[in-house]
Length: 168
Picture 1 (tube, rainbow, N blue to C red):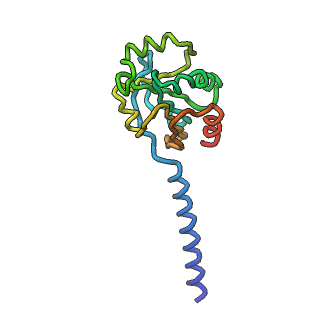
Picture 2: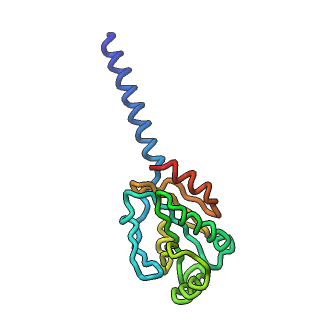
Picture 3: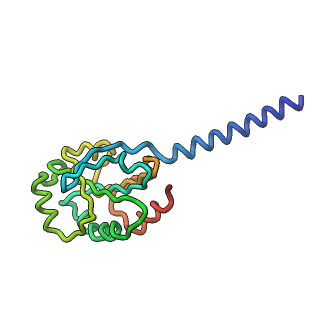
C-alpha cells in the first residue's frame, strides 16, 4: 500500500512542476506578429529578421503631442547603445497621419539622429495586428519573438530600460 501512495505523490509533484512550467511560458505572451515594412529610406524590415535580439517597438504619430514630446527622449535611448533594437512605426495616410510623401518631408525638417528608424505602416495593418488603440503605444519583444509587455501612453527611458534589462 505504501508504494502506490509514493507513486501518487510523485505523480502529483511532477504534475505541479509541469503546470508551473506551462504557466511561466504562457506569461511570456504570444508571438509578436511579423511585419514587412519599409523605412524612410526604402529599406525593408522584417520583424523576424530581428529574432534572437530584444526589440522595442514604438507606434507613434506626427500629430500626437505626447509622441512628439517624447521623440528627444527616444533619440537618447537609441543613441545609448543598449543591447536591443528600437523600431518606431507610423501609419501614413491612416489615423489622421500625413500621407507618406508629406510625412517624409515633415520628418526631414525635425532634428533627429540618423539612427532613428521609422517604419511606414501604410494602411495601419501592423497597428491593427498588434490590436493597438492609441498613440503612443509600446511593445517589448524578447529574443524568442514573444511579446513581453504592451503599454499605451508615454513610457520613460528608465522604464523602457528596466523592462528590457529584465527579459532575455
